[in-house]
Image (tube, rainbow, N blue to C red; front, side, top):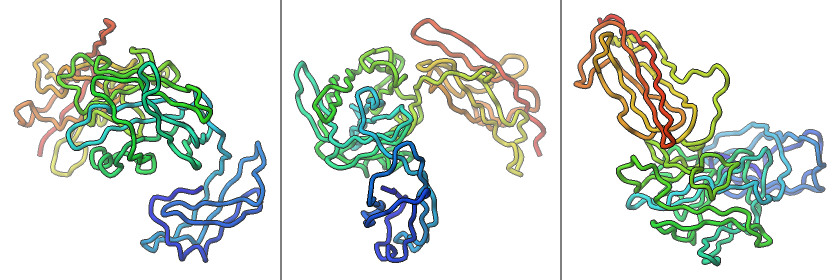
Length: 356
C-alpha cells in the first residue's frame, strides 16, 4: 500500500506506470482516496529489498507524481514491539481524548487483529484496532482518537497519516485507569496504568496536558517512566515525545546560541538569537535568564517551568519591559532541577551589536 499526502484522481490510474526493482510480477492496482493498494501475483521474496517506481499518477488537484520508494514486507506485530507511548485522558473542553502507539523497532509492523482495552482487575472493554491491514512504520506513531479533525485543530503539527479515527474509542477516566493492548490471540501484550499522580508536581493544572512515556523500552507500569508533556503544546501526538530518553552524544553542548552576535537592525539579518538546549535527562524543570555584564537580570525567558529534554528559546535583544538593550555582552543562564535532587546550571555569552 502506498499512502500519498493528497487524494488521488481515479481516472489517472489508466496512465499509471508502476514497476518493482528487482523485477516482480504485479497484479491489479486499486485506489482508496489517498492510498494506492498494489496486489502481487506472487509473494515477495524474503531478505530482498525492493523499490517501487511510479509515474503518471495524478492527485485531485491535477499534480502529476513521479516517485520511488522502498518496499518493506511487513511482519505481524509481537508483544513488546508496540507500546502505548502517550495518553491524553483529560483534554481541554471541545478537544478529544487520544492515545498514541509507538513502534520502537526497525521493522514495518502489521497491527491487524490487535485490540485496545481498559482493565480494572478484569477487562472492562475492548476495541478492535483494524480487521484489515494496519501498518505501523519503523520508529513510527499511530494516534487513536474519536475525531481526527478535532485533534488536528488542537494539534496542527500532527501528521495526518498518523491518525486512526475510532468513533467507539473507550472513554478514559480523568481519575486514571489501566490501558492494555491485546494481540490477535487475545494475549496481553502491553499494560499501562495512568493517573494524574504521574504528572509533574510543578504544573498549576494538568488539564490539557498529556502523559508521555520517557523510554519505550522500559515498562509502562513504572511511574518513573512517565512525565507531563512540556510547553508549548503540552502534547505531541504523532511526533517524538518532548519528554523522551535521548542520550547525549559525546561532545554535545547543553547550550548552543545562533547567532552568537545579535544585530537587531531593520535588515532582518541576525536580529533574533535562537537559544537551543539539550538536557542530560528528561523530566527537568528550569529557568532561563538573560543577564547583563554586571549580573543584573535583563529578561527571564522561562521561569520554573517544565522543560522538554531539548528545545529552543528566542531572544530579540529586548528587556523585560520590551525596550532594546544597550550594546555589549550578555549572559544566558539556564538552571535546571529534577525531583530526584539533580541540579545543574549552564552559562553562555551572546553579544548585542550596534543599532541603526
